[in-house]
Each structure stands twice: as structure tokens, then as C-alpha cells.
Image (tube, rainbow, N blue to C red; front, side, top):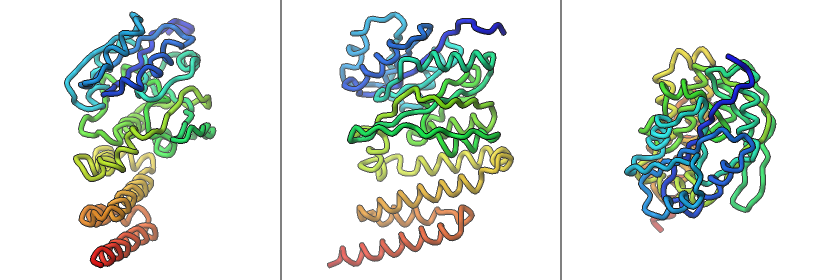
Length: 310
């Protein structure tokens, strides 16, 4: 393949009722110094004025699609199907890119001669109070799956070969943890190239998934998605999990999340949910921590039950 050739990049935004937030994300794509891009916006059944917000930009490189609500994973998968770029990135409607985002990725992809692979940069985070947390520079070893397990929970700081995404997509069963589920599956099978440049911003706010999870999703229809994601990865990729020495690390992560769920449930007096979650903690994820998690939850559940009767 000839080096320094121009290639098309596709950026996909899956959105739902975020008309009040999406304009900044769109503008950050329009502001890119590298101009061979297309922006695919998949509206997953919004009933606000998202379409009008998109139309205001009047840019032919922005392509808007509407579908009945099917969830973010299904919306992103549709975006993959219609994308024409050789590499694809996913931008959430509440986040944004620095102007050199695509250009820097193009340089890296060109340097490696356009491989069938994942490329990853660093990401800046802004919290609920507007405080900026610049990503710490990471050390990439020879284990891409372990690198993803340690450093990545979302797909924003990536460009991924469309050839890969044509065969491995988001799992639409999961509405929480679907980013990690995709990235780890890919890192088990394909090369990952990381470069330490901060090129995009992840914004924490009250409407983001983690905040909603604490407030509502935790006890509604998707309470175990993060745990199901980890179980599914282990069950369907067991040989590769063993090859990359990830089993204990995944089980430790599972236990930490199960303990988090249990703790929140006990605080909210959802005792059945809390006990069910803590019972799923795996001893193989670390005996001492598993013992601590279980004792902590059972003792607090007993305490809250006792004071609730007074």
C-alpha cells in the first residue's frame, strides 16, 4: 500500500434525546484539520429537536439517519454498516474532539502502513465541577488485551479498521459496558497501536450513563449488564483469556463491580438485590478481597435491616 495516501475517516455519533448537547460534538468534527471525513449521526428514536440541531450545520459531509429506539449498540452497528471510511471512530454526543484528532491518527496509521488494527490515543476528562483531568501517559507492553483491561472503558479515543468492525460489532444485548465488551474482544484478536497524545475529551455530567446507573438503571431493566459483560467475555473467549493471562484480573474486576452494586443496593435498602449481587462474587478473583466484600455487605445489610425496624 502506498504511504501518504489520503483516506476517508468515518466518525459515528449515536444519539438519543440529546439535542441540547450534540452541537458541540458535531462542531468538534467540523473543526478537524484533516478534512477527509464523514460524520454519521444515528438518531436512535429521539422525540426532541435533534434533527433540527443537525440540519443547522448544513454540511454535506454530515449524514443523518433516524431509527426506532433500539439502544446505543444497535445504533452504532447501523452506523458501521453505512460508513464508507477505512477507519471508524465513535464519538458520544456529550463529548468532543480536539481539532488535530483525525490528523494525528492519520499520521500514526500512515506510519504503520494502514494495518487491519486498532489505534488508541489518550483522553482528557472533565468532571461534574469542570475540573480537568489530563490522562496519565500509559506504558504499552506486549499484551494488548491487558492494556485495554487496565486503561480503557470507552471507545472514544480509538480509530478501528472498518474491515475489523464489519465482522465484530457491538453486542446489542448490552447497554452498559458495551464499549469495554467490544474493545477487549478486539484486543484479544487484533493488533493495538497506542500513542501518548491527548486528542479528545470525555465529559462527566448528570446525564451520563454512570450517573443514571446509580440513580435508576441499577434497580431497573439492566442491573447486571456490567457483570454479564465480564461473564460473557470469559465464557466465549476462554482460550484467549488464558493465553493473555487475564482470568484473575477479569474476576477481580467482576468482584469490584459486584461489590459496588451490592453497596449501593444496601444503602437504598434494596436488600434482595444487594445479597444476590454479593453472592455472585468469585473466590478465584482474590480470596482475601472476596472475603472482605462478602463480610462487609452481609454485616451492613444486617445493620440497615435492624435500624429500619426501629
